[in-house]
Length: 395
View 1 (cartoon, rainbow, N blue to C red):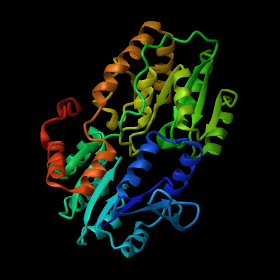
View 2 (spheres, one colour; view 1 turned 30 degrees about the vertical axis):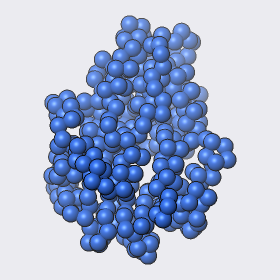
View 3 (tube, rainbow, N blue to C red; view 1 turned 90 degrees about the horizontal axis):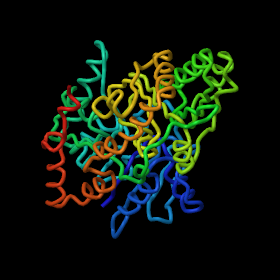
View 4 (tube, rainbow, N blue to C red; view 1 turned 60 degrees about the vertical axis):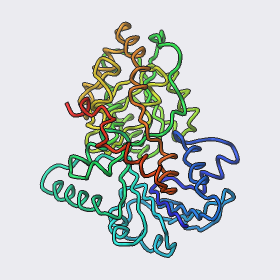
């Protein structure tokens, strides 16, 4: 039996080598993901991972038994280019870990089993958006695509909203690699409050709003500093900080190991997640990790956060794209010790509530195994099963 897994970003070969050499993870649950794929490559089963974005093409059998193929693509690329990479592998099972429409349409016409695994929201506006929604609904309801897993309840509800059959939609999550710290955080007594941003450095992720908010807080006389962890358009936003005369208050740390990111979260005064509505969030792990650090969270009103976070209960929510509102939220949080401690204290209950019964590795293992018990396991965890508190997310 041959299982082919297609992923957009993340070089599987590089991740295996780095973790084996130094044990360092660059994102949440990376070792879990790497090991789960290797666990599928047992007995007579062949597992092939095709990575879209790699520095150069390669095809190599790794020491853990997985065959890794690097496509050598750079973003953006035509998704049809994936089909000539997958077809020669003659898969019995295909796992597509990215919304690759052309590949999924081709897979739906083949005889092998296909599983779609996403971490994306499917919210579309306007006439063109309605056309895209119809295309996705039609494609994902194809019989050969057995299930559609999406990260978090809101992202799954976005699939249901565009017409994807809720009987084949399953919310998934990573396992709890870290858990909340034991004690609520006290408001830091410091001459300079550090605000932390972790994620892709791009306007849609809200980094520009965070920098503009720092400039506004500087104008108000507050001593704050923004630490930016992540890759992307760093030079563009470093230039923005300089233009706004806050380049001495905005530091870009680049990509860091997961343990270092967690340490920065614990040390920060506030973590910001200012994503714009047009950024296709599932539910960012940055939020889970912030809750575990007990550091108060300031987040935008992104649709995928609705129902997960509650304004002035477990986080401070502001209108996405509004840098002044972000600055106001930061100011109100840092200047109010009672609110600061209350939001920190609420993080444990919020984290517990957000845990989902379907974890990534078990879902992959059970889908590949496909026993009668495995098929029943999937049926019991469908979006339509009644086990999820959907009312909270629909109001």
